[in-house]
Amino acid sequence: MYETLTYTGGIHKNYEIEELIEDLGGFILQKNESQLDITFTLAIPAEDVDKVEIKAKELLGEVEISPLASTEIAVVSPTLARQHLPHAACDIAEYLRRYGTKTNMIGLARGAGKGISQISKPEKDLIEEHDLAIFSLGSFEDCIRKKTHLFEDIDIPVIVVGSPELDAEEINANAYVSGFGRIPRRLKRGENIRALRKLAGIAEEIIAKQKEDLSDDPLIISPIIAKIGIERSVDEVAHINSPMAIVSQLDGVRVKLPYDEFHEEIANVEVEGYRLGDIAEIKKSKMYDHILVKILPETSLI
Image 1 (cartoon, one colour):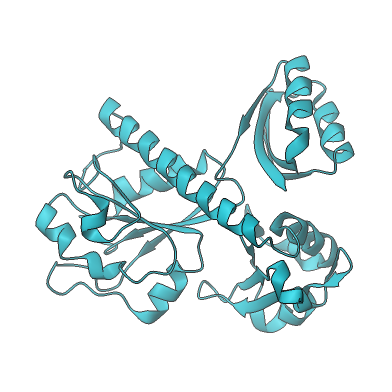
Image 2 (tube, helix red, strand yellow):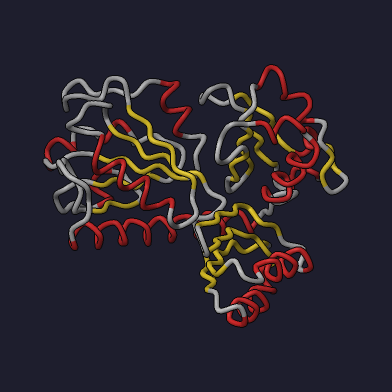
């Protein structure tokens, strides 16, 4: 079992932390340099976390557990119109990225108006490609209650955010966080930051529960191992013009290559003695025809 961490420290001797990660059998998932500082998002065996913490202290750096790392979260708005989209949803997506997750913003085509709002099958399928969905709704209780059909049969955990105080069970969501809504400015005030922190904490709890459920019937290989294997075997990955060419999820990876052209090559990648196509479902994504690799659980080998 791998634990995902974020290391922040100086450029000086940062190679020592990289060498330690490699010696422990871990991986650097993302690396960002900013002037004299460097930040790693990394994955290492859970039993070796203390060794990284000791090395970080020696290098005057900091290490934090990143429960949302190696996950993909959808931030959904009823429409792309200005009354729903720009500020709250954008700030939610940006804030959660600080916790290591990859967020995608999705605006529904027919979500305007509590009486006519709808969600299409392709939109639902796209949302369900993620590990968690956050529906950013409005400021009125009656409006939120009449839009529960947008997410009530979504087959992944759903957090709803809005302005009024509501009970999550009343709207058939996994969780509800108040303090959001139609805010025509950036979420920079104290009450907004507290709401964002609460949202991140609830998201971490839900993701932790999903990881616990996966441990009851573990995946044949870790998505992190699949990610590294694809990066090493498929040359075209290095030429993808995206900050994250391969996005790790709880049960697989998203590869940002065209499905029709590359899915067979992805399926033939050898990882830990397995052919990837034999231990995972290789599917076409609803997002730009990306390739979704969903790894099967160990019980599928029986």
